[in-house]
Amino acid sequence: MRVVRTIADLRALLRPLREEGKRIGFVPTMGFLHEGHGALIRQSAARCDATVVSIFINPTQFGPREDLAGYPRDLERDQNLCLECGTTVLFLPEASEIYPTGFQTHIEPGRLAEPLCGRFRPGHFRGVATVVAKLFSIVQPDLAFFGQKDFQQTAVVRRMARDLNLPVDVVVVPTVREADGLALSSRNTYLDEDARRRSLSLSKGLLAAKAAFEQGERQAEALLALARGPLADVDSVQYLELVDTQNLEPIQGAVDRTSALCVAAYLGSTRLIDNVILTPPAGTA
Ligand code: AMP
Image (tube, rainbow, N blue to C red):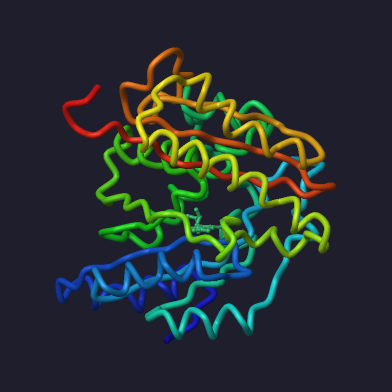
């Protein structure tokens, strides 16, 4: 595994691979890696000839009162996990490499960035779309791997790649969970013992709704009620919504298309998100 910090060094490493016709996979991350990131890297390593992982805590996707300064870091552990999962090149740019003085061009996502997290994190998806577009342009991957955990992010990134004709296939990898159901997240490290216990209410509700859906429950309100029940244990619920995965508009009445049941909640000052996808079996809608 090679570790590079500049765009020039990364491009110099990737150019001969591309010339040899190698398939390049890319996994963008903010570090403090866990087995969720590991699943993305492993899938890239299995499907591509070379896998680039970036670790970059992107300042433009954090709001002024969010956790940019305190975002957890552990570069040594990250390097070991990258190596173990089959990374070819680890890209560790400084903020000044990505946003040099004078930087002023941004990607403005459209309607998909407005609901759900977009309502509570103004500018977040503009920051995400901009950095992902830049990283795509720097790495020029054939495939890029994103986690289902950040469902709205996958929708915004897919739309952006399509709208801007970026020559990359966006692959979405299922959410990796702890044995008790909690979705792995770098931010789980903020949870104390009590908050960690109560954090289970997110996955408990979502998984109960998904189980009911699989048993035939189709009413949006009934599914939302199942997911809402356990949320009595969190400190505050930012949103709990059932949306169409194509346009992120709320589903009312019967769930007759692929939908995402999405939640964001606070445990103390830690904000967690999670979701499950509900797909009606073909021909039953
Ligand atoms: P982050 O470092 O949080 O920006 O995440 C980098 C990538 O890892 C994103 O595509 C996330 O969706 C993905 N990811 C984070 N947590 C998980 C998880 N529990 N399972 C699968 N992918 C994840």
